[in-house]
Picture 1 (spheres, rainbow, N blue to C red):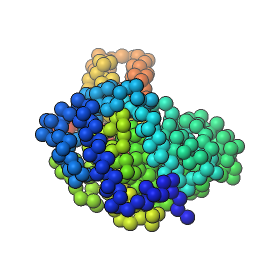
Picture 2 (cartoon, helix red, strand yellow):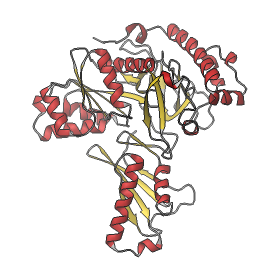
Picture 3 (tube, rainbow, N blue to C red):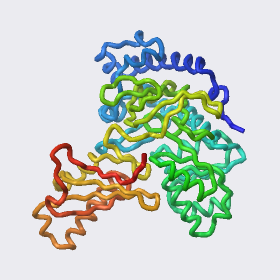
Length: 433
């Protein structure tokens, strides 16, 4: 029996969804034009005024917003409400260490938590469930989003945050957690740890809601088999709100986008041309209910496909496929956004040449990041102890910049292959898509 948190919205007719989108888009465009000089200037640059936007059919007339805009407007340049109306920020890393900061009014948080509640109920959650949230809390959106969604459903919520596996398993067993929320790689790690401890018979999990990083169908099946659960995908990004922008239902054939809050487009990443449903391209989102930080035509850089095929779950909102790659050079490692430019800035600040290679692997379902860095001729003559000290210094600097551990290996000058064309900076061996 399929469950819905807000059935009148989740199962609304296509016509009703369209009415909401048209009205809310027109209102949002007018609001940002009047209250956000950054948006007004972007719109004026392409000769568009709010009067030109009469429905979602006119969305293509508006300019795109990118991560570069968020960096240029940091921290308050895209704020559409007085700061006194905002009650929280969430944040993610930016391309060169300047963070993306998203603002929320209390109303924004309520709507975001509604979206996460929809995801939990789509995974079979009710007020009788115990939801164990092992996403990170703090600036990262994963923990706060699912935590709030679980409260909305009325489930007992275990705000565990990430790490401390012994405690995770103890609480899981003692409190009878039934729904697990974390990254897929941590779910796989927990599954292995539970088996090692012989605790498989003590857990009561029935479902998992896993997101924040790419994972394959094979990995899903492995987690489902080892934990005896059904594993559901969830998608989101801090810039748009956080997890719950879209979520999987019992059909497990793509994630329903909450179209009453977000309008999705697929574009050709090279030309910006809008592509029809069913074609693969870059996903673009427009927020139509956000008060503090509404983004219009935000380029996610995620490559995917939209489908309006009727879903057996009864939900009528468009589905997006799992992201099939990126149109930029961002990597998602253990749920953290990592840009080669961040690593490059650390190396240059420490006096290293900008010749490096990033190697990403996945061992036992856990991402491993190694940065191979060429030494200068002078460094190459250092003792083994000095080189080890240099590697440790870089490991600490990378951790400060990225927020995660990266192994650093210093190699001899000219050891990294040169390329005639674009330098091959990233070797991703994870086979994620």
